[in-house]
Image (cartoon, rainbow, N blue to C red; front, side, top):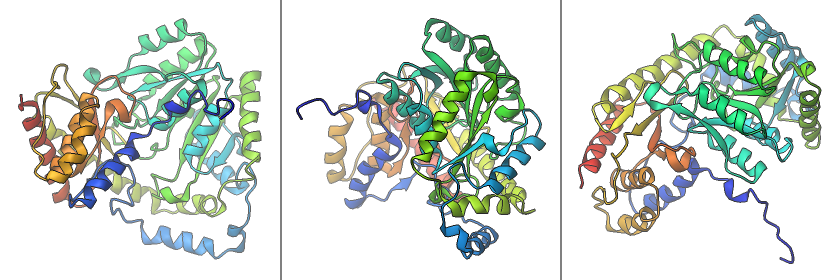
Length: 434
């Protein structure tokens, strides 16, 4: 090209959660049976959407208006329902105009970062959810700025580190939390969120809370939505139906603006997000129409509670099995449907390996292993030797600690236990291989 056509942040767009699928697909063609533990799609893991939800969607699809455009911000009836429900929960009171719909939260995340001033930065958790960290880094053309979720302290954030980095980096304009967290399953309780909001207030920042799993928290986790403690600080909460119904293929999510009137710059920023959405006309109509109809049904929250109970049981099982490996730091999840473990310092070393019996598989994997981080090396060996596909923390979640994430979605309980046992045995063999 006669001039540079590459965006300076292009190399920051990394999504290991799906990239490892390309490798697994190659191995599957070579005869290796794959157990997919890489991505949080309940439907792909055979979780059945209830017939009554399917019936609501089917009935709604018969309405002619479901095939038309919705208003850019989203259907008024749905936004009014969401605002009313939020107001019943306590905390900040919002109206329909504070809600903006998107084609999934990936779309929303993209708009949130693309509409920031190029020099404005958002500090987020480490391990990081890659859609946030990649878009933030790509927007800035620089590596993502993070604060530690400490595995030695139950994944609690280091609030002193957040404040120190905010003080040192004047370009930071917002603090991001993912609650419940992906990948760790950690839940920011009300007091922790309150302290983060306090930092935002002290340094004139706003808060972003990704709450896509906000109705999938475990009992006694202390989970509270940002709206309950936001006080007078500007904020954005992000929600959707991908994980809840679950209906990831609907591509339907929304954001809620809090305290737009508290800061003129934040208000103008919120307007710019709406303006950029107008260029795309609107978000998908059918799933928007189903939201109040499904969520108002008396069967909805009992259905969610049944799912939560299953995820918590699997978390307890994974914790019991994997905590037997002394080289790991292991915590029970508090929400969502993920389970993450971290290797203790010095547990991973050059030269560790697992036996790969399939010679063709070995030819594909070994060149990848030689140029990978230690935890990614383990994940590739695990994949090649057992067929179990998990995601490494370092490359998958921009983490400074080494580990891996699996899901809690396997519906066959015997298969789930067997999978975790096989991971445990592979871990023991791996760390003892040299």
